[in-house]
Amino acid sequence: MLEVKLHDIGEGMTEGDILHYFVKQGEKVERDQPLIEVQTDKMTAELPSPGAGVVKEILIDPGSTVTVGTTLLIIESEDTGAVSAEKSSAGPRPLSARVLATPYTRKLARERRIDIEQIKGSGPAGRVTDEDVLGTARKPEPEAEVGIQSVADMPEPHPIQQVSDAAERLTIPFKGRRRQIAKKMVHALKTIPHVTHFEEVDMTELLLFRKELKEAGRPLSAAAFFIKAAAIALKDFPVFNAKLDEENEVIVVEPEYNIGLAADSPEGLIVPVIKQVESKSIIQVNREMKELNEKARENRLSRHELTGGTFTISNVGPLGSMGATPVINHPETGLMALHATKEKPVVRNGEIVIGWMMNVSMSFDHRVADGATAVAFTNRFKELIEHPKMLIVELV
Image (tube, rainbow, N blue to C red):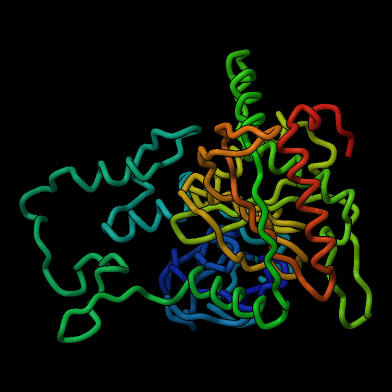
């Protein structure tokens, strides 16, 4: 017998939500075949079968939240070379070994009772896209099969459409990544004494420089400059690239500058990490940032791309934000939020001129750093953004 258990598929995870089973009791499975789709606070992943056999029993219902180590299903093994699910080298996979599709796309197909394996994907490498699923759903079915035969045949309602009582109030399930994010936010606020410092940065020179680069055929996102400037400032003020180890009574300064960039996704907030920013050019940072954001939108980031951050940036400016007091991504020491850039009158050399100004919020762990250090760090970041060509020659 093989016990398939929920094992640690993320950095320090303690629990996960069971989203879906790809198999049924009594079904024969092959080694490495996807069995279960699970959701953690960082990613959606598929647990593969550790060996060939028959699914004897499914122990946990879909929608349940379980702790690491919980047995999810039992397989009656037919594979003499099988290993336990906990020790399997296969590990979790963010994508299925069958048809290529993101977990979110698979969810769309399941809600519409569509067999995604029968869809010919139009995406890169034959990947099935959301549009492929929705296009299939819109195709008319044979007349004999049209119509819902029973309550069991009805498609699952969209979360926001679920009815809570006779008054027909709408509810949104508090589970999955939303619940995991909530737990992490509560832990961070309970653990870290947050202090937020505010600053205003003149973006005029950076916008002009970006325009020059675009005209030269090298368009770069402003966020790439923010990430590189943060890495340089962190080198000058390494206390913000550190983590507090209370048990051993030390502040551990990280040797690499791994910048997390908070991003939105269909399942909620997620923070992909650009590793070793100190060794990358702004062009490299820009390219990697775009790749990670694309993966975040499609919910196909790997564990490596979601862990190991040392400092986080939240670029909420494109949404129109004016200011915030961001919650630190524990166990990091600081988080910088960048807000909307707006045209304002400013004073330069005693004269009032029009400039493009951006508000910055810098939250930090007051156990690790003091306000004066946070101001100095933010001033260094500001200096680099207001004189962007300095970033080209700075060596981190």
